[in-house]
Length: 124
Image 1 (cartoon, helix red, strand yellow):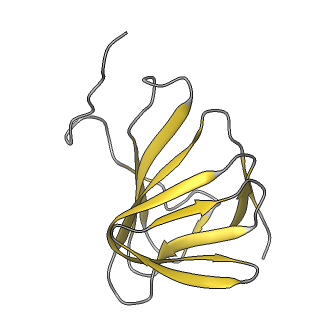
Image 2 (cartoon, one colour):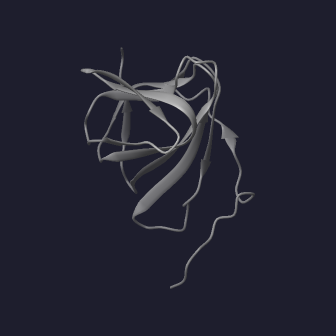
Image 3 (spheres, rainbow, N blue to C red):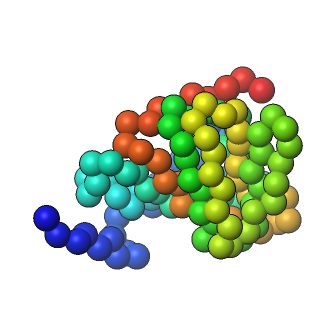
């Protein structure tokens, strides 16, 4: 066993705007833990201004850690503004969405979930 370091220029950032979950603009993602952890999946997701994930659920808890910009996260009870350094914990099976705020600036967050968690995209 050893510590694995993923350098900032390791891996490929892929545009994911055409994925069914995203709407409102361009979205890019880069896995950070692929093949390195059998328990935890970590990705950095970059949202262009106005882009977001639509309504969806996960079968396991999701942690979102904002690394840059200003975003929003919402559930059926309302929405909250999140910005760099903020952490949102989304319980399993909670209908929610998240993405860049409508300030005209992009937002990036880490998405942290257990390996094997499944995502269901919901109709609005």
